[in-house]
Each structure stands twice: as structure tokens, then as C-alpha cells.
Amino acid sequence: LTLAAFVLKANCTVSSSFCVQDTSLGLSMLLAFTLHVAVHWFILQTIVPKLGNVKEHEPTKFTYDQVAGSIAPSWFNLNPAHCLRSKYFYKHPAPCTYFMQGKEHLLRKNEKSMSFYEDQRKVVKEMYFPFALG
Image (spheres, rainbow, N blue to C red):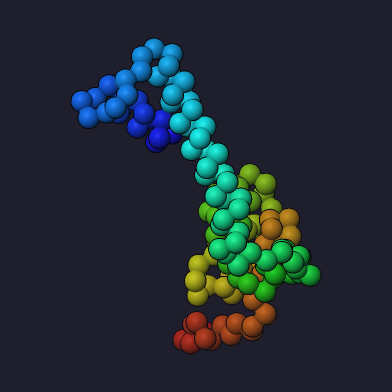
């Protein structure tokens, strides 16, 4: 597109060596665009793979819920719209809890709301409220 715009702007200027009119200008712009796309595609298909260390994709043995069960932040609990939709639209019994760093203990597992992480550490009540009675 940039090359086609260059052909349009460079047409019939004082320093340019060409001046085309009417449909010839449109065809010149189309030719420039097509040529640019072809060169760009050729470079991406042949040269870039030779320069990069491209390996074949090896599928993992783990499913999404296994990985999400071991890592607290996920796409679902980092998306506030998903968490609100889980609570107010779908009315899940245990809705998706929005993830906040340091508050992983608040996350509860619920496969319907795509929440697979639950903190396995014991949370001691006195740890947060040392002065609480009973």
C-alpha cells in the first residue's frame, strides 16, 4: 500500500521521470501493490525460515485445566468482563474471582466458570486477624 501511495505521489512531479494519466496511473499503482505483496510473501516464505531457528511444534501432554490448576493467573481470571459475566449473567454458584497478585488464596476452583486454580496452602485466620476473638 505504501509503494502504491508512493507511485501516486511521485507521478508527474518535477523530479520524477514518469507521468502517467487516467487508468494507466491506477494500473501502475495496482502493479506496484501486487509486486510489493509478492516480494514480501517470498521473503517471509523462503528467507525468514532459513534465518530463524524454526522447529516443528511438539504437542504438550498436559491439558489446559491441568496447567491452569497449577498457575494462579489465567486468561479467565485476569479478564474482568469474564468474571462479571460469570457472577451476574451465568450466576455460577462459585463465580470466577478476579485475580490480584498476593490474593491467590481467594481463588476457588469451579470448572463451569473456567476457574481451575485453588490454593492448596492452609490459610490461618490468625495470620490475617491476630487480634480477632473466637
